[in-house]
Image (cartoon, rainbow, N blue to C red; front, top):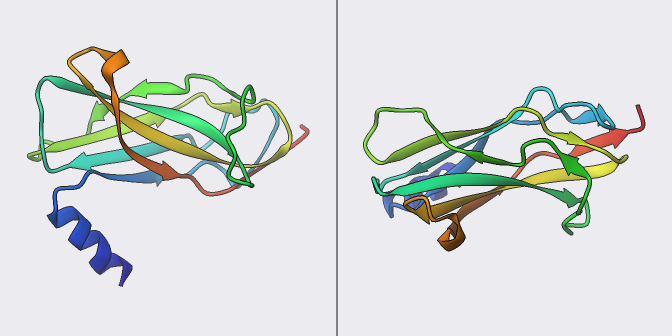
Length: 137
């Protein structure tokens, strides 16, 4: 049933964001997450004059944003993954680490900016990673 639902969403040309590489289910504090978090964004529409970027945001298991605990390059630009029509981008967060012990997940927000004007960017899609348990290393 979920697949049918996704099929329906796709047919309306809605952007689709999924995590293609999940972070590890557990890790030590201040240790780079491996495998790295990778998200893939696809959209039926292709706009040559827009650029996309993604932000990784640390969320507590209570669903609240956690400030000052996720480090590394938390904002990345998309890498073209396919020669298909439309937009097909991968976002690679290769050096993220979490400074404090706890149970978290990472929310990935993808923004679309007109040209290179990142201040005018709008949220296109968001997706949550699996849970990550961080222990003192």
